[in-house]
Length: 494
Image 1 (tube, rainbow, N blue to C red):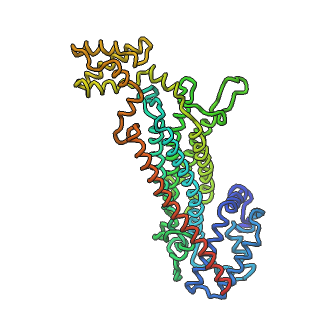
Image 2: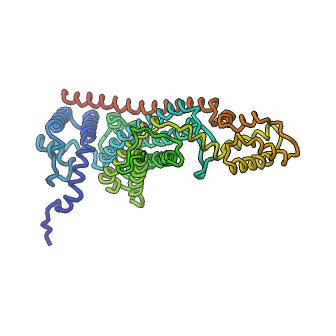
Image 3: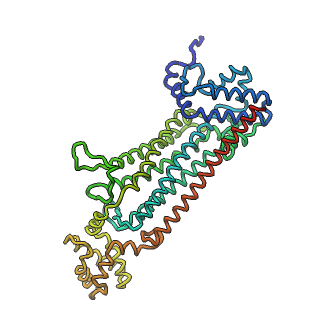
C-alpha cells in the first residue's frame, strides 16, 4: 500500500511544528547564527573546508542574516524548522556547497548548545538580580541594626531582636542560594558542539576552538553525555526553585507582620492599595503578588525538572524545544519577584510603637531575667527559669509590662531561695529591657551591633566574590563574541 500523505500533517503542523518555529524565532535565532559562524570558522581553520568554500559560505551566511526578517517569518511547512530554512537558503545560493556547513555536526549537538546559550544568558540576568537584592538587604540591615523587632516562633512572640539581625538571616540564605545558582550556571559552561549525533565525527574537528568561539569554558567531554545528559537543565531549575521557596518564607513573614493585629511593619502608601468600598482599609497588595509569583516560579521550575523524570538517557524531545521554551517563563516571573522585593523591603519601616507594646504585653525579654539570675545570683538555670516564669505569669495576669514587675520578682525570688535578691528595682528594669536583651547577645551570630556589623561585612565580602565569578564569566562571553566576529570577518576577506 502506497503512502500518499504529505509532510507535515496539518494537525502536527498546528500543534507542534508551528509553535516550535515561533519559539526558535524568539529564543534561538541569534544563537544559531553564532553556532553557524563558529562551526564554519573551525571547519576552515582545520582544513576540512577550503578557504574559497569557507569564504563563499561565510558570505552567504552574512547575506541570510541581514536579508531575512526573522520576526516576519511564518511557518509554512515547506521546511521542517528554522534550521532547515537556513540550510535551504544556503543551498539556493551555493548549490551543493550550501550543505557543506553541516559537515561534522548534528541537530543533536547544535540543539543542546543552543539551549545552554539561551539558559546562560537568562541565568546571568537572574544571578544579577539576586546580587542586587542581596546588596540591597545588606544596606537595609546596616540601617536597621538597632531597630528592635519581635521575633516570632510558632506564630507567637518569642524574643526581641533587631530588624537588621532578622535580615542578616535572610541574607545568609540568599547568598547560599546565589552560590548554588552560581554552581548551576557553571554547569552551562561546557560546549556540546562536536559530539554530532552521538559519537563525534571522523573529521579532524577542533571541539575546543568551537567552545572558545562560543564563550564556553571548554567542550563537554563525553559525546554521548553531550546529547543525553540534561543535568545542566535539572541542576539550574532546581537551584532556581530553592531561591523562590526560601524567599516565599520571607514574604509570608511580611504578610504576617503587616496584618492589623500584628502591625510590626509599615508599608508606605506607594505600595498600598485602598479598598474600593472600605476607604479605611490599607491593603499591602504587593506582598500577595510577591507570594504568588514566587510560588508560580517554583512551580514552573518543578515542571521542567519533573518532565525529565523517567525519560531515556539519550537525545529526546522531552528535554528540548517545548520544555525549554516553557521553562523560560520561570526566569520571567522569578525576575519580577527579585526586582519587586528589592524595591519593597527598603521602602518599609518597623512600627516601633507596636513592637514596644507587643514586647511588654508578651514578656518576651523574660529569658534575660533568667540568664541574669544565673550569672548574678548564682542560681541554676532551672531555678532561675521557674522564678522568671512566675514573674511573667504575674505581670501578664495584671496586664502590666515586665519592667513594672519588680515586686512580683522579689516575691518569687524570696519564695524560691529564702532570701532577697541582690538585683534592685533599677537593675531589674534594665535587665528586662529589650535594648539590654539585644546588647548582651553579642556572641557570633547574635543581634548586638558587635556581632551583627562584622557579620554584615562578611556577607558583603561573600557577595563581592560571587559578583567576581559572574563578571569573569560575562567577560569570557563578551570576549568570545568579539573573537568570533573577528574570525568570521577574516573568512570573508580570505
